[in-house]
Image (cartoon, rainbow, N blue to C red; front, side, top):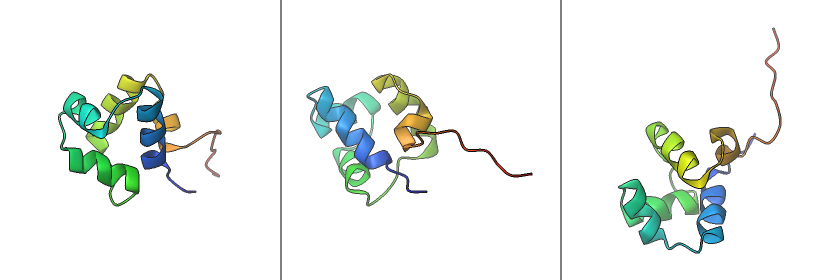
Length: 74
């Protein structure tokens, strides 16, 4: 399972015609942090997942790239 959060953040940001700087300001993080997320060099801190998803109006699952339902085997 591949986590595509950086690609999704970039796609959602570009759909809103935003710069990395604008998103960084809204999320109160550095421009470098947003850049690293989008390049896949790092991942957002877990505490950032809900604010990012809420801002873009998507679920955390969608933000992370989980498109289907995953069931754990018992």
